[in-house]
Image (cartoon, rainbow, N blue to C red; front, side, top):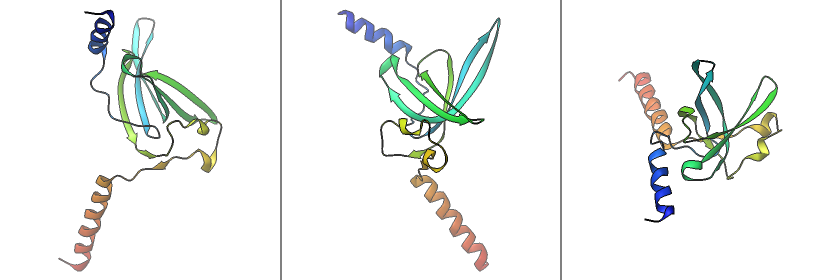
Length: 138
């Protein structure tokens, strides 16, 4: 067995399986474990995914958010043991692979359009049909 095959086997064991599917432009909430002295707590960071880089065990994601008048960009290793949980809050519709143009922008320029998936369209359609039946008195 070659050295590369051995390294690949070791990396496969370390990969997390519970990472949800998300893309650039989505809003994601990442729960990280913070160790302070002998105590451990979980801290959440919510932001827009502006870049995904790397592959395998070294895959990284960059999140960006504006909070309290200041902007913060933070990078996370997806398969790190410090990352407790990842959840997708909303889906965004973008036409770029990297959203670095969001950094430093404000107002309408800093927005990412929300993607309306077919599932949410279906739910809205069913709700409209139900509402129409109630109005007719059926």
